[in-house]
Length: 440
Ligand code: GAP
Image 1 (cartoon, rainbow, N blue to C red):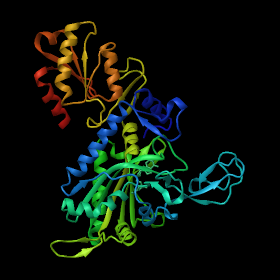
Image 2 (cartoon, protein in one colour; image 1 turned 90 degrees about the horizontal axis):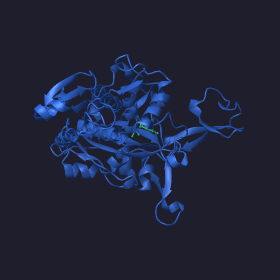
Image 3 (cartoon, rainbow, N blue to C red; image 1 turned 45 degrees about the vertical axis):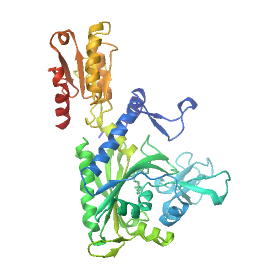
Image 4 (cartoon, rainbow, N blue to C red; image 1 turned 180 degrees about the vertical axis):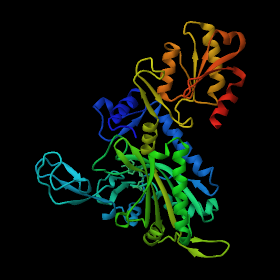
């Protein structure tokens, strides 16, 4: 586990290196909203791609969609999100008027000023806005509180257009919004966040089997992308703590610097969603088995992970700080030991000297060769040692140096991020060499 105080260092590091920063910076920042920068957006896209490929390519019976954030407000009535089910118990201090979640308080006094607390009130976390020019109650719509509802709205369409047969899944990556009372730490809990959801439709009698299957599959995803299994665990929800839609729930937790916390939820949602939407909309969302002609309301096994939260876990896991350099003989150095699939830059091309035209020209040729295949960065500023350190901070797996020998024999030095070993490789073999390393 990374020590609690590393969080401050990591947050500063992520800002300094173009990963993540508070939104609206010129205005002093906007609480609990974050922007992904030059390298942050690349890692986030890589994580989404890894998840999407894992779902849709490794499982032949999973397809994807991308549904709208704004939906009919009736969706949220039927889903239970407008009632007490999606509300937090909130208490306000009579003295300083700060608000807290009831279940996060240790006793009945304000944790800030020790003042007396008012009695708890239900506070719905759905975010409201209006459509059209008139701001009245007839025009209220909600920013979706969970991305999966868009999947249920498309259930019939996907079954018919995708010719899907149960068991099958629909996955989606999309934004969700919750008016969280106590956001933080950092991007762990925010009011605007992205979810990566799979809704897997099964026969009711097979729900328990698929629940166990997806628990294991999702755990393996994190391990395969480089999280130490000792930093991961399952947390089964006791029956009295289940969300209003769930019959069974299990979280995958990561050991964050402040302790174990949820990264992804796996739920048996039964026929709650399709059943309620059928009733309220009047559209039948049951499934007909074309072979047996059996008609039934499928059960749903859901895996729902926060993209921002997972990304934070991967960043924390990869963060390494060396007080005296990586070789023990220098100043402070950092290494982001990201899985190759997540690294924002895959290859860096470094001409040995800036002021030698022929070196730059050769380096540009190598850059042009690689940039089509890999996310490649051309870096010419500073000594080669400094540039290696810069690439270590970004988590770049390979640095390629073009020197005077390159001009003679068309070979380059390839430096491996993790071992710091250097190998001489022919330019014509570079794509093969790097591709093979990626397959390891
Ligand atoms: N559709 C089910 C659902 O939304 P959830 O447990 O409320 O279930 C799923 O959310 C995942 O979404 C969580 O495990 C977490 O990773 C992420 N998540 C939820 N609320 C979040 C927030 N306020 N900020 C960031 N991520 C959040």
